[in-house]
Image 1 (tube, rainbow, N blue to C red):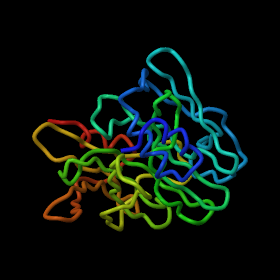
Image 2: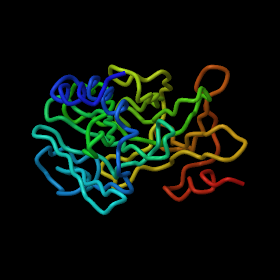
Image 3: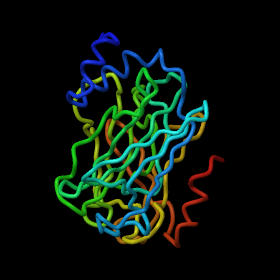
Image 4: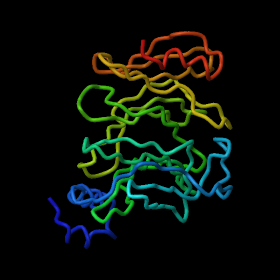
Length: 250
């Protein structure tokens, strides 16, 4: 495992090395992330997939009161809100964002703190590869029960309408890669300010993903079953509020 001195020498290298350094040094971090928000609304990217949903900066607050931020020169944060989730089980959350490059389109970016409490990129998916193509996150859980939490998201919810599960193991190198997919699902109306549906996680039951079908006619429940994503229809879709009964544990 890399030492702190190795991490200092590797900061300018590829993201995989940065992630390895962060993980090696994380026990020494003095602070934890308690909140994250997007700031500085911008129209420079000009996509408009989410109403008022493009931002120039990610702001993070630590438990000692300090604030950190991250930004890109040729990308924006294109999302509804950052998501906090503890992927490595150390009790301190990481941050999940959706970033869109001016030329490459969207990707999922996970952030963490390094050994000096700096905000750094930890793991990321490959960009879609085309401008004005977006990813809509549904939620995060261990959907397949293998002990590694996955990010569930809809790839191009207005075009491809494909649900994917992407495991996030912070200790591994390379890009994040989806391991399961199911077509015919969406969770966002073009131009709407919110992502609809979500994830239901109840004690004693496997987590499930709530989305709509491609034409927004029905509410669908998707879960991991017998080695694959399986979906069933629950009810007629009648607006965002019609998801609420199915997101609540009985």
